[in-house]
Image 1 (cartoon, one colour):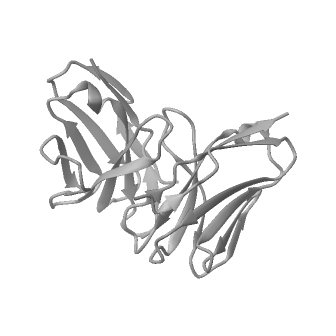
Image 2: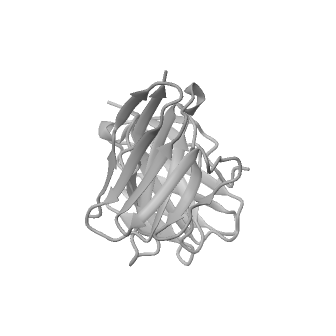
Length: 111
Length: 116
């Protein structure tokens, strides 16, 4: 069963605005969370991660928020750029085992 | 930064033949490597975890005799799809975890396998 869920298959945002991508998980053992950007026929590219002992991590235009009590995390991209258009995957791990991936959210940033 | 080289990027093979996919960590050692499979518009599904020098651990439903994994060195893991069938056509991706960084996952660029 899917332990990491991304319930929005797609999202369209105007350039310059904020993109918010959401992710929920069910396994309370997960202690590390990552976001990846992916293009068709390519491997995932790491964007940003967060440990379960934190609730926020920021790297440039990308910020990840973690709400452990709700088992929810989100990726904020501000400001969004057309080059951000891709599929974004949320992934989670516990103790360094294999990553569990969500189904991805396709982000389209329009000029 | 950490780089994982995966070859080939695309391969077409005939039904019944075998195909080998290589995954190589170029600038770090990877005791553990993971193999994933992705169907169109789907998530990356873990097939198996390989540890250098030992047998791979396969996920439920993945045939270990069909998908042979070898992790003979700290920088190289191979996946061989044996007796390929059209339903094996998919996108295969490897991931190497840096021995010195427990959450240091780096992905290869993937292999598009088409079985005709």
